[in-house]
Amino acid sequence: MSDAATLLDEVAAELLALPPARFTAARNGRAEEIGGAVGRRIAKLRKPTLAAWAVNLLSRDGQLAEAVELAQALREAQDDADAVEMTRLGRQRRQLVAALARRAADLAAEAGTPLSAPMRDAVEKTVNAAIIDPHAAAMILTGRLVASVDLADDTDPSAAVAGSVPEGAAVVETPTRDDLAQRRARKAAERAVREAERARADADRALAGATARETAAREKADRVRERLEGLRAEIARVEKDADAAHAALDAAEEETAAARETATARTRDLDHARSVVEGMP
Image (cartoon, rainbow, N blue to C red; front, side):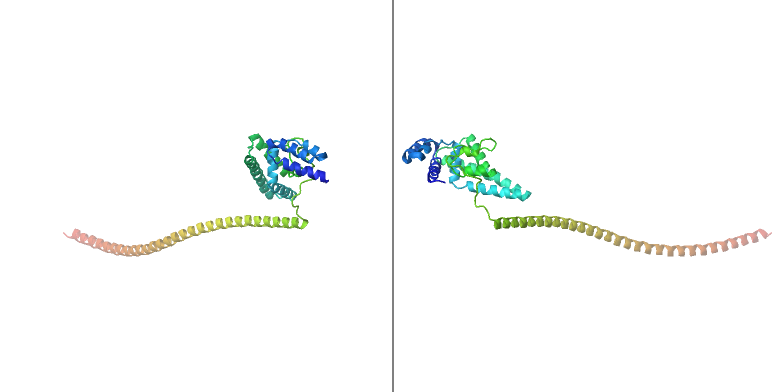
């Protein structure tokens, strides 16, 4: 990049971070001060929208880099087909976009120009674009936006940038091949830990169920054993009573037989006595 282009970018970044109400006067002053071809190009710089200005403040604040790093992690997780990691990072992305939009609104309010609801929405769409699209991220991270970026539109994001247009995608501390291998190995290890934890949880639930069933079976066995012991004691008592009853029956039968013999003998005696009486004159 030439010195003139570098100077234009530096001045544009400086001017586009000023509150929009101060932009025009500051731009004209800098254009006159620098003069020449660069001055003429500075004089043509567009005034930023409030949303673009707020995102420029956010970029200068250094927090957009975190969004771009997250975007790289999301793409890597997608390449690895890591569904669990994609779900976690997707949730983190939504939280980060909302937090950065609030931060941009706070920065704008601190600079004396609060954002309306539509401008907040435009800021959120721009931050989201930085996460989803590497090309858009390269534009947004310049801190030289003059308009917000919405990927739902067909407009080229580079049209929203003042000064030079970055080539290619935004790169923020791109990890080396060794770093990527280490990260993938770590994620594989973390997945193994999660799977082991799920397996351990399943085993714990199975153990708890088996223990509960064993306890219930033991309690039932104890109750049945107690009942059996009671029945055995009752049987022993009944058998004893039966033996006594049989003994009593035997004695009663013997007594009955003896009484029957006596009665028979007395009947014979009676019959004999009657016959004697009847034979007397």
